[in-house]
Image (cartoon, rainbow, N blue to C red; front, top):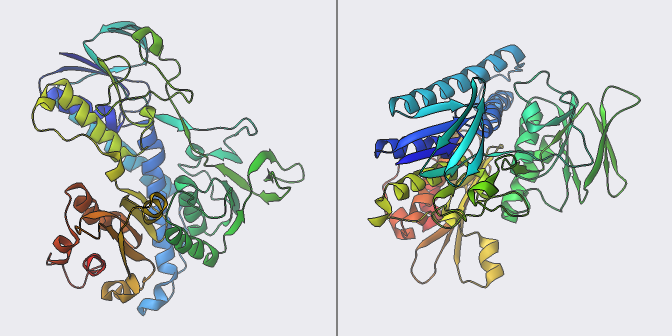
Length: 453
């Protein structure tokens, strides 16, 4: 089985190692970084900077734990070195794993030349590679609107922000989705004056209003200016200074030293000549797939951001594994299709936000009967010990059967705690299964059992 993978991110890497272990002859084509550009240029650097900013915020509020308040200052050079060290470590580990599984790596840009061939233009020349099956996992890149031209200096995309050249005195963030609010948290942690342009009436418009409210309260306490009901229509360099001017559709104007675009992404499907392989794309450039990640060409798969499903590394990796299993015939055995509605996600703000499964607002909108239980962390001993009682645990369940349908967590370590609810949702466990689990005391996880009662 000759298996060609275009793209070396989480989807491609997982598909490559899984298929190779099962006996496929695997060739991976990557033009940028092994490990994935979105993963190593976006996710890892941003979360590293958020962790540093969070440590600074924790030290600033240390008086509540019986310590003298510290006034930490960021060492830009040390932070940059830390980001690069983590990226290098992860990239090296991924390369070593692929090599150990016998995966052939080809550096270059790929395009399909027929149903079973792909041409790679690399530094060492061109090479045509034949395959029996292929996976397109080329990821995405930041979306840049027509009304703005990033310069990498003052007008930035998310990828221009790290490693950090400087920490801005003031910054306007355009976009109040997941990426936007993470950048607000990050910059405000580093003491920047932050304005967030919110096109609707709440941040995180796709999330539970109670969740968004907790985050908005934290932003206001930090001094973040929320510009609600405004859409940015232009970003220009300030002719009267060194900063930028952001203009909105309602006439409001914001001046700051920097501006960051965080308004989504576009798929990296252009230039692949997918038509030559019989693979269709939609109007947005995404590659439509079925529940097995199969495209309009039965022997070609797509996974990760380019597939138009949830843009999460965890989802991409699971798609890659499912593709490998189907490719090598394991789908004929007991096989669970990937259910995107049961994927857990997290937002690394402070407090953290995480959710999984059915949301309360979604259930009410559809008229579905649910049971909702909520416990604040302020009632949990470990949250008081940590001097951080913000947030809550909310569990959504079926009132007739007790089966856990979903949940939301706002608070410290929410990204870790959501795993318990995610497991319950995936395995169709009941709230009683969580209640009867003997959990650690004192621990934040106690709030899970209390919310399940």
